[in-house]
Image (tube, rainbow, N blue to C red; front, side):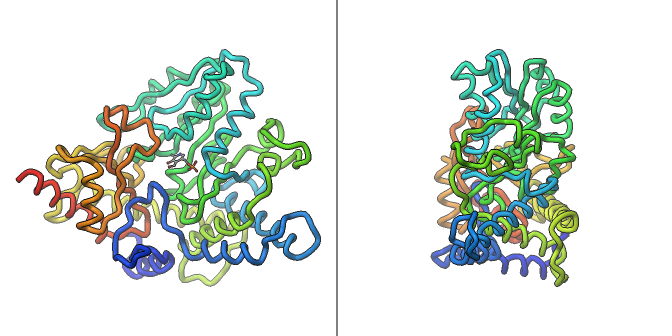
Length: 430
Ligand SMILES: Cc1ncc(COP(=O)(O)O)c(C=O)c1O
C-alpha cells in the first residue's frame, strides 16, 4: 500500500465525517461517486471567506479587495491542479451541467445545421443534453454515441474513430464513466478530434479525484469538474483555452466584462466557493508531502506537488480496487461473489487503468433492498440509482448498485463491504 496506516489515520482526521455520519453512527462512506466528503480545510476556508470577504468585488474597501483576492487565488489553485497556464483560463459556474450548457450554446452560434457531435456511450447526461438540445433546435444534424463493449465496459475505439468525420465539430467525452469506472483514452481520442478539426471537450467530474490531470498534455479545448466531487462544496470549474474564452460568445449581460473568465460567468461570484476549492487543493498539496511545513508557491511548484499527490492517490486506489475485484484471503472479491453481476473493467491493469467505481447487481434482489440492507445491517453507504447515466439502460436495467472508493477509504472498509455482499448473497441462496 502506498499510504501507510499512520498516514491514513492523518488523512481521516482531515475529513470530519470520515468515521461517523451526522447522527454519530460509525459507518463507511462509499457513495463518493455522488459527492465526496468535505475536507475541513475546505469548509473552514469557506466559512472564513463567507464572513470576512462578503462584499462584492470591484471596490476600494478591504472586504471588496479581499473578495477579489479570494476569487483569484481560487482560480490559481484550480489552474495548478489541472496544470493549466493560469487563472485567466479558469471559468466558474453553478455546476458542470450549467457550464456545458453555456459552452454548447456559445459554440452553436457558428453552427449551420449539418454538424455532428461525438460522445461516448457511457456519458453522464450532463454531457449529453447540452449537445442533444442543439439537435432539437436544428442547430446541428446529430449527436453520435461511440459504443462500449458490454462485457468489458471498455470503449470501442474503432467505432469512435468511425463516427468522427469532417462535419464533427465537437468530440466531448467523460474522463471516466461514473458508473463503470472505465477510463477513456483521452490522448488518443483527443488526437482523433484534432485530426478532424473538431474541438475536444473533457468531462472530468467523475475522474478528477482519482488521478493527475494535465489539460495541456491532453490538448483539450475545455475540461470541466465540480468541487463536490473533489472534497469541497458545490460549484464547478471549466478550463478553456484562452482563444476560446476570448473568441466565443457565451450568454452574458451587456455590462459584464467582455474579456477573461468573467465574461463567461453569469451574475456575481460566490467568493466563498473559491475559498472552498482552494482549501481542498491546499489539502491535496499537504497530502503530497505531509511532513513538510513549506507552503507550495502557486505556479509550477504547487502544480508539481499536486501531480505527486494525485499519482500517490491513484496508486493507493489501485491497491484498493484490486482487493475489491479479487478479494482478500477467504473474502471473495466482486468478480467471484455468487449471483453478483459486475459491470465495467474486471481488471485493474487494463490499458488506461480504471477508477475505483464499481457498479453491480445481485441476482434476484432489488437494488434498493440491497442498498438498504447494506446501510441498516452493515453501516455501508452504497447507492442504488441510474446515476443520470446512459449506462444502466444499455444493460436493460433502470438502476444499479454502485460503490465508489476514494483515498480516505481504508482496506478495512473494502473488506467490510465485500464481507457484507458475500453474506447477503449467501443468505439469498439459502
Ligand atoms: C461524469 C459526470 N459528469 C457530470 C456530472 C454532473 O455534474 P454537476 O452536478 O456538477 O452538473 C456528474 C455528476 O454525477 C458526473 O458523474
